Image (cartoon, rainbow, N blue to C red; front, side, top):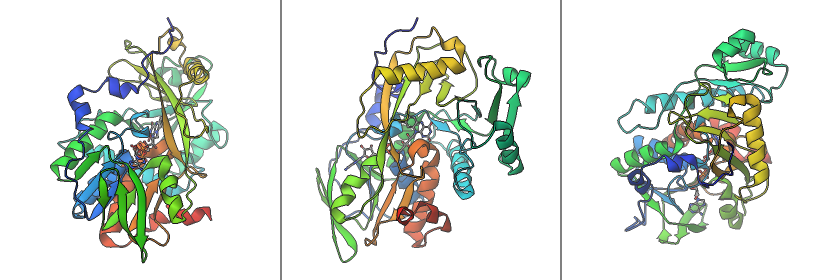
Length: 396
Ligand SMILES: Cc1cc2nc3c(=O)[nH]c(=O)nc-3n(C[C@H](O)[C@H](O)[C@H](O)COP(=O)(O)OP(=O)(O)OC[C@H]3O[C@@H](n4cnc5c(N)ncnc54)[C@H](O)[C@@H]3O)c2cc1C
């Protein structure tokens, strides 16, 4: 029976052991005041950048987070690494980075610290997921481009996913796509960063940046002033607030997503089904459904209307969910830019300060490659040509 949602926090928190949760709250005793690199924001993007910096010998790296690590969108998401499903309306080079990033996860999953439920289970998109042209045409173009897409119809579709509604006639399948548990990923990264002597600090809010002669010199925080050699802002949608006093306007806004999770169920379906939102059954039996995309400012309120919309889409794709209870509900604020692509750039007029934010619906997927691109830039002094498409200047 469907019941009212009651557990208002991401399912990933419910699945985390309390000792693991503690690892996400290292505190902030004895912070270094002059780190070589200061990363502000402990979401998946900040953590991944810190890892890639440390691997490239970037000196002493300090990451500060105002809340717990992965407190924002990074614990509210579906954990989908669906590079295949990045539509052809995006630049080819951007989609290639999505694939590279997914494969960086595959490599991470082989490392000692990795215990984040990496699973290459594919992704299956069905209407009302939107395609830039009729699905058969789109699939043919994707195949011609060597994107590993498979158009599945009729009985083959039923075989691929027996739980799909009869009304679903076709789907686009990418076998290489994968999933993770995003909060266990954050715990793993935290553990690995700590082992590498990257300093992680929580409960530290950055209030103000100040500089002179083209360099950010001081960063005022609730735990004192920090004077970093280089500064990287990975504060998600709220970066605009920090940059405004420096006269820098960034078109970043929150895009709220509300998602639900069911009670644990016996295996109902095996595919990660995209149908205007994600339906994914976890190894624990919980089904995740969502999320909405709502442009309502920095508002994380859970609404009945959004719950109904998510349930409707889920049951439309997978009728067996009709009588299932979804007691878990949560929201998260994705960082959104006008073209749906991130900003990964040096700040205009500030030689030692960078911004990596705006990954919108793909921040988990793109975190490793964002880390690679930015860490290479900081360490070598040379930006990759791939970064041009993520410049702040593209917004004029
Ligand atoms: C419902 C939903 C489903 C999603 N599904 C997927 C998916 O399947 N796959 C995928 O790839 N992506 C998905 N996403 C998107 C993904 O979660 C985000 O793109 C990603 O988490 C962004 O990471 P981030 O590190 O940039 O931002 P955040 O996770 O928001 O981290 C920013 C951090 O900065 C901190 N901060 C902000 N201001 C300050 C300050 N002044 N001082 C100190 N700290 C500060 C915040 O507390 C926060 O922890 C989904 C998102 C939602 C909401």
